[in-house]
Length: 329
Image 1: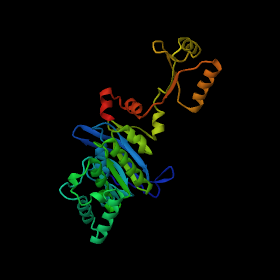
Image 2: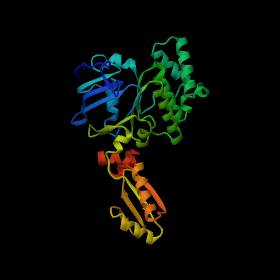
Image 3: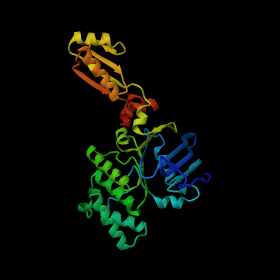
Image 4: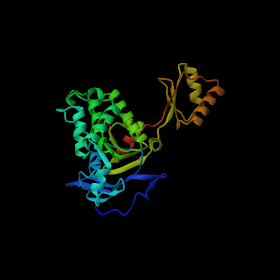
């Protein structure tokens, strides 16, 4: 991979220094192209989500950017260090939590933390101090002396991230961190991630959970066939997809017929007495519809607004089927 000539002092996105950047990143395994020219700019102190189904190349991207595997082409910088020329500098600035926990279940949570402190060459006193602080921060102090094999899935993931933070990385790669967690544990993990970003940490998140990306990410990229199909904030991505509408349901057939006659652009469902009006869901359009109903003396029994969500975006961009949809959620 050629050495990049860019420096973080000159790279900015929306006024923020860039924590991770890639230009034309490529990777193949045999005849299978996994990454086919990936360009990214991730601002410092933000959450970036790489979205895609199983096998899309998300984990490969994380492995390349964390120096675990080499790219076939392109350039990248992580934390101001060139990936090819200074991999040691990259490793010193990052933390990685993979899909599968690095926690050793045969020893206690505290011992896992102290082992990580030893690997980071901290003194015994410093290692114990950092361990105690992180165990408290992640609400694991009460379980610190128990074997990690007795921890719940959510506790193991919190311990995993606590171990990642022992070296005080400013950039963290979280590869599907909530896979397999129940909803309560997932929401706890989301708060952990928000707290990290509040401390100025940059989080590179891969996920299959569309709601997770919507909740957490400042910017989202959808990976499809080795390329970035689209990138932007959740709201920007949702605007890419048509199909927003307002749905009016009536119980009075006469009111329904009157509304349908006047709103000729609305799609009719004569069996359920519903009208579907194309709309971007904006306050202005909703006010216009409500004003028209009032002026016409027509009262709908139910008004609902549908705006495209990340599910719609994902399947529009990747051509996913209903079967795929079950996998991705």
